[in-house]
Length: 119
Image (tube, rainbow, N blue to C red; front, side):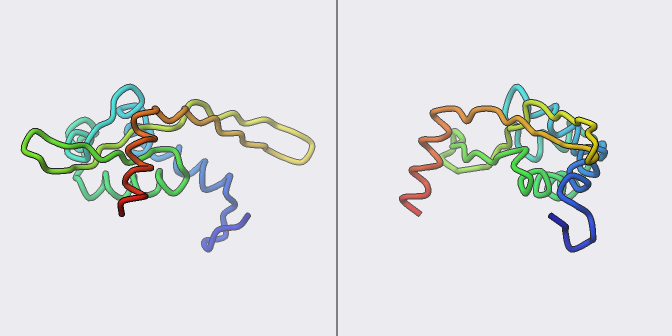
């Protein structure tokens, strides 16, 4: 499929994974979910840069947002990587990209379903 900028989905994925901040966000959120503020510190980037990359990663379903309740009773969003593996295979037809996603945690799936039903 071609994007509005003329790129295919695969080319868009290559460009996203070629971005230093996007890669760092994926690494930082692989083991533990992190807030935009924590990602900003870890990536040495402004929060606006982090939010732009998170949005692009979410569009490709490589990262997910999870609502958390802080001790003060306020909700805030943290981000967790969904990407497990990307493989690129060379075939007679060109490059074939395959993305493997992490399983969603049962507690996160329940929270997401609850929020969808109550929202």
